[in-house]
Image 1: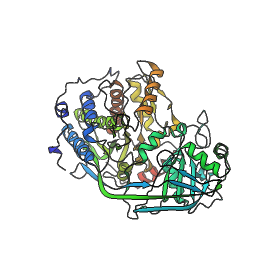
Image 2: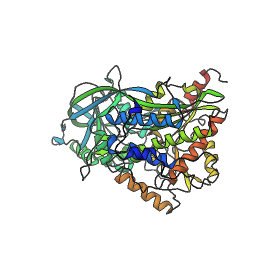
Image 3: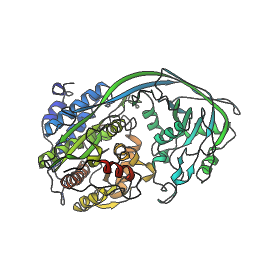
Image 4: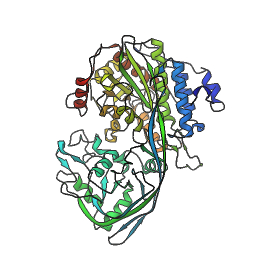
Length: 558
């Protein structure tokens, strides 16, 4: 790839080369860093989310343009190539496009035929041309959780090998008003995430795993499931072809799940209520599931893009900044026929923020420690790019001090409050508090902890390997309109833009909130990069033990 020969879409090349939009520090209130370039934010977001980039799906022509654009903007900012002289880290992916048959349910009061897309979606992690699930006995396993440290096992006493499990989304206590409960009350844990539920089902030997969709505990509608789970899917190119995974994984609509349970003489609401209580035991159903999936398979490397600003005094200590550049590519068309999921907010905005943050740090000069800027691929496919980097780091994780992730900048305008997603998990909380105090912001609890957002973006991949990672952003209490306006904006985004063709660039966006966020990220990153401290996870946090082991084994740094 020759990024110097990149041809920008007509009309955008001129926009990229000019700075007609005025830079601003947005009433900095204590921010002492260089201006965050509004021109960079608007231009990069508009280009990356244009139709010419076709939704930035990995391994497509849209990826080629995207990776080239980011690398060139990193070069212009003054970064150096971050991977031994290259801007890129190859991420081996396998792309599978499954064509499922109808899902047939037999053995109950009457046979059922469920329709693809309207009743269910299904895919397979197994890399083979044809996958057959035939007359697989069905078992309701509640929330599908085996958490010995919490005294909870939905699989206790059940043998689900070769069977198909039906699983509820989120945690058993997701309806709890507060944050008290066996799984943190309404705050979703990783046990509530769909990724965990499929992983655990495979560990138990299940041949099929179907999650019951409900909008509130999932935190998104069926339209998001449809757009995310149909078409090309990506996974790491594992030598074993992921044959240790379940044959078929997918989602049922709530109505379809009710019909399946009724065919077995069971009531979904009754079983769901029982599954919330400790001591729940899996319920064998009288039904069997059958489905076949035909797979188109393509192996191709995608790319993480990496730039570095080397440290002046301790260049072998690293502070990392991450954002994912990918989106869904082509997706379900809207009423106008638009079938490009442009991903302007998610996450062209965060990628533009990564570039603008790099520019600001370069303008301030090299700090003591090195600053790494990592734009990762395949976040929408299960955090694959960040997972690959975390398992194959260019810079040793034991010498990676901490990191900041940017996934969706605030485009509703400036706000009075700030939120640490996932709560105060590490000593990075003190850095964040100092930065937001300079802006006069109030720290507030996460408004939707039930969404499990901390486990849904790229910081999680690095956190699992022990690196303290901050994922924080402005809250909903907008300067113009207050909390009502902020909550309305968020609701509209989830309902009408998120993972759909309407997530397009809007020239009327108010970027003041995004700039405020980036100023805070700059302050946190700069303090970390000028410090000799090694912040850790809080005692008893789930990531503390792996960080302690990592740091204990690290060679001494100077």
